[in-house]
Amino acid sequence: MPDLITSIRTALGEGGKPSSDFDLNPDFKEPADCVLRPAGVLAPIIMRNGIAELILTKRSSGLKHHPGQIAFPGGKQDEGDTNVIAAALREAYEEIGLPTELVEVLGTLPKHQTVTGFQVTPVVGLVREEFYIVPEPGEVEEVFRVPLSHVLNQANYAIQSRHWRGQMRSYFAVPYGPYYIWGATARMLRAWTDKMN
Figure 1 (cartoon, rainbow, N blue to C red):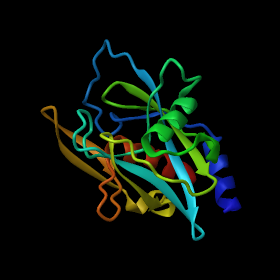
Figure 2 (cartoon, rainbow, N blue to C red):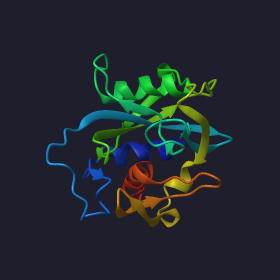
Figure 3 (spheres, one colour):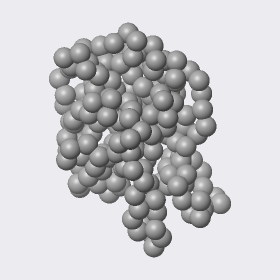
């Protein structure tokens, strides 16, 4: 465990190139008047039986944006947030009941730009102990865990495509069991994977 955390801290401290939903779609152009809104998401690592796991959520199927998709807990930075890290921690508490005081922030990944106009900072945090999970009603359908080793293995990633807004769009996917992890979440995880390998 100490070796893993040290490796993660080192990798996160090396900086890196920002990513975006456009990385695999060079022909897709964002609107010229696009104003990016800052957001933070938390990639919470927790230990169970000596195995590092990543906590993820499945968004409610009734949501207007990204219904049913796999996501990190997180959201846009509000006026009351001191920075995007504070936004990620606040949202994690609101969405899954993760107490902020249990999270040791290990660092951040390079920012990620989404097609929906957000500039997302992924915050990697170590959850010091188990906590009582409380999914936010109407927003979070399920909270689940994936072995960290699965999403940090480049061999588990694939590039897939689907039609989106009249165009064929390519994206990363890293499925795990019944969970189809793709799009922005998979792209941010892939950026983390590349830094660790």
